[in-house]
Length: 184
Image (cartoon, rainbow, N blue to C red; front, top):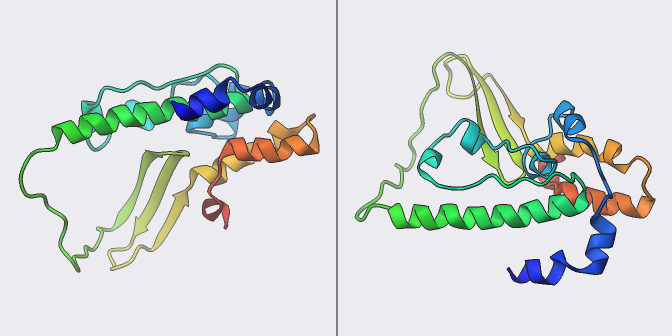
């Protein structure tokens, strides 16, 4: 709430963010962009709702969206999502059963069966996916990580067309990458 009060109505933040770094929802979809960036373009897609996993189907939370698809919308959608995360955490803490919990067994490993699998979750930056191929040995034969920062960074070029060089830094910031995810 303090961040909202300090930044959201700030003239400088609004002047630097409104209308800057625009990319249509259709363009973002064609680039496979996910997470807050797609929701800031009005697309209410979140894996936790579309394909609930773990216990997300037990939680009451909204998928905030904004239609503007600019830097300001990408900032503000993250603020709205932080509020939804608080709602989820409050429900999770309220519903934790009393008593002992299973923390896992140290040194436990398993050998995956032969085959392939893909699993994905909604990470803070977007879809985080793992593709694993097993040949029934201790380690995967092949695996691939779909990191949201790596995918979302593909939108930087199209988002920067027609804007000033100084805007490119702010546009990059609005993509909100984790550098370790894009280092390939």
